[in-house]
Image (cartoon, rainbow, N blue to C red; front, side, top):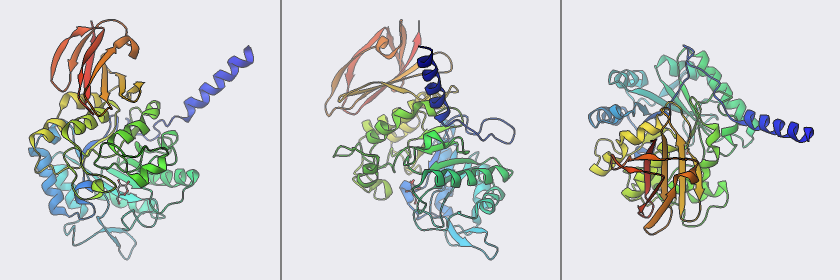
Amino acid sequence: MKKQILGLVVVALCLGSLNSKAQSKAIDGSILAPTPPMGWMTWNYFADNINEKDIREMADAMVSSGMLKAGYDHVFIDDGWQGGRDKRNNIIADPVKFPSGIKALADYVHSKGLKLGIYSDAAPLTCAGYTASLNFEEQDAKTFASWDVDYLKYDYCGAPDDMEIAKTRYKKIADALRKSGRDIALGICEWGDRKPWLWAGQVGGQLWRTTADVRDKWKNTKPVKTRGELHSGGAGILDIVDYSQDYASSAGPGHWNDLDMLVVGLYGKEGPSGALGGVGCNDIEYQSQMSLWCIMNSPLAATNDVRNMNAETKRILLNEEAIALNQDALGKQAVCKIKNENWSVFVRPLANGDHAIAILNRAGTTQNAKINFAELGLNGEYEIRDLWQHKGIGKGKKWNGKVLSHETKLFRLKKV
Ligand code: GLA
């Protein structure tokens, strides 16, 4: 009996230590990325056809559209900004795309109250074939710091499969960023292939992608049986939710599961998210992506054209009640309590003692939900607030109602 208890304790301790807790702090000792980073990312809209004029316009639109006010406070430059290295091996921006340089762009976005993210890769070249940072980690980190960059997305194309090598390469860039003298949050992007939820926080990352690149589609038409099939078949919104929900315990302030970019408002646009079956989603599905990314604490990187948003896209991206879940100080990722062919139901606690729940209809038709809160571990009576209707919808111990195909109901529950 004693032996059995000891065994259980050892297993519990091992499981605990496997979780990827945050290691790197901000210079002032506080947690770096205490809530999931938010912003707008260049990749799905522009691919590598980026330039300073378009990025400045997007920054302006982030302010005028209300995105910044809602919390989207980063402009993340993705792949395609690099112009090689100078005579002293300093990484430089493409002089045609960025004639004023990255420092001037950083100054511009900072003057608007935004932060700047940049991109590199743990190999000689990036995914799109541009100059990357392997063996130049300290030099590049210093350069990024001298440009006043606030965030680095660090990709893994062209790097070996091995998990230990990945850990070493990510630790090297994390250490270099820390030595640079500036707080630069690190987004690890090796697509979940080496289980980063187990180690990425420990080597110094603030977030890590959990899957292959998101495509602008609801889900794969063929069932995805292996993680590799997400790369070849393309990851839809539902595929990413299903592949990310198991790692909830690894997330917390300063160490987040990154479910990849929001495709809200792209409507099947040609480009990276339009590849591999990315035919576009409807607004109900985009609203579900927002609901699920919020309740699951994913970083929120919009990728639509912020300069031209229709009313639905604005309504979805600017839902401050949904964003409040995402940015909740407790930082607890929702867990999936009910999962079957027709439903996924998530629940998470919030800092003020409330709970949030998300009820997703996975089926192809409208269904009636019958959710007893006790089934979700929530005993007693609750006031229910609908975070898409922005109003209280009564109180009770359960919720019964219609959920459209692929719709997600998002509720905040307050115990009465
Ligand atoms: C990889 C990443 C994407 C994007 C591209 C850029 O595919 O997963 O998010 O950064 O590279 O080339």
